[in-house]
Image 1 (tube, rainbow, N blue to C red):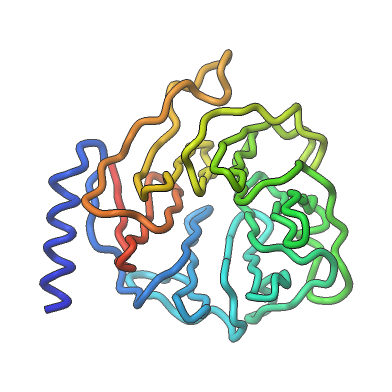
Image 2 (cartoon, rainbow, N blue to C red; image 1 turned 180 degrees about the horizontal axis):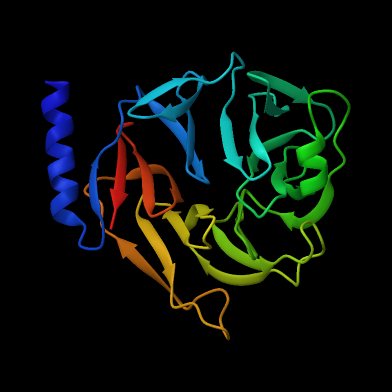
Length: 258
């Protein structure tokens, strides 16, 4: 019955989305959060167990218990239920002393960014420091922005969502340099993901998927949100290399492609 139900859901998504074709992804039991970058796909399940995708199967990624994972040019990072920060080194997770972060993102051109658990301020770890960390010592983070709930960076910009679901964007200079100024974009989003190609996808408070469109030399932040129809509410999403990975509220993993 579970297989039949999943098949019906996939057919529904195929019919509903005109821009993308969605199908059931590789079997991942009870996914909670996903991240994709540079061809790699990682995620955690509802029991806080991290996994990575290889071929058509997900495999255990180390032995740490994590609530959030991310992968990108500076490696694979995560944070646990106590907001401790980890980096995947030599086959297992190494905890890093320093700030405690409730969410991390490694999708920028080299830096790692995260939301400080005590203040919700956004912190940035430079590419050099992120690459050099191998499991010992503490990390030195740089202040990037004021209060955000979720943050994601691409090749030129960082996007964030506040606790009251407002979306902001900023151009970032020199890896972890000062932002040009955070510009208000819109409201009504609870998470956002920026692909390594600069594509921006967001998830609304009602579980709807949107893509930011109409970018130009005059508008690095785009001018509109374009709805990507889905047949059921979405819990989490991530985008990389023309693949949009979505986790439904019923914890079915779908992958959508052009």
